[in-house]
Length: 250
Image (cartoon, rainbow, N blue to C red; front, side, top):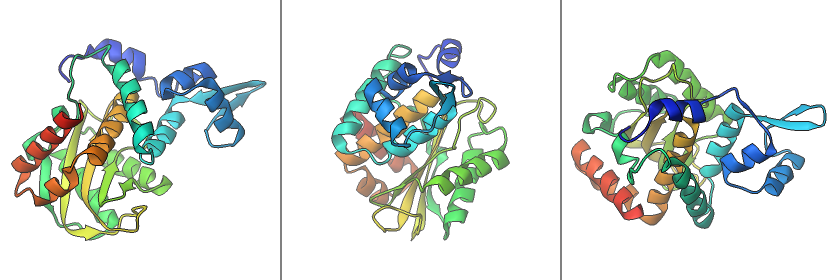
């Protein structure tokens, strides 16, 4: 991504097996330490106990946060977005993010998938077009694992697919692809509706991944991106919709 010092970003943000203490988790999630303790007490936050100490594995915290972001209300989403943007802006002056990770050829306006399993498989095939996926079979496996935890479908017919964990061997660079199915597919949406728009977020870095999730959710809540993507006639037009929606958010 333009503007990033990749080495510093990797060293600072990508340590999937790193253990965090309560203060570090609070900083990472942009919440207060008391809230972390409350979540631990209620058994809602995955943790490890080392004697009297409570520790957190970064991979598990990332997976937990990804799931929570999809359910944020508008106010919480805005707060988390601004906090994570402040962190990322230390390494980049870019104001747009989502549109920077797309290419027109990475958007498929006519996916013929008819089942949930077929969607995941076809989105991996779409990701292969980028030539940035080291092991498509591994990507397929981790996407399935993530969907088994809970569907990444959102209300309104949108799903934000992403791997359960983020490792450097998965991709040569971070990117996103978008598929629009010809016929809506049952995908486990919380509103009971079928889903026809599928983003696949492939990020090498945990915090960038979380921020991209948050940015897309804000675009959905604050613009007409879903309706505009459905009415767009081709991949180029769909990319323009994404770019314009993000510009209105930032």
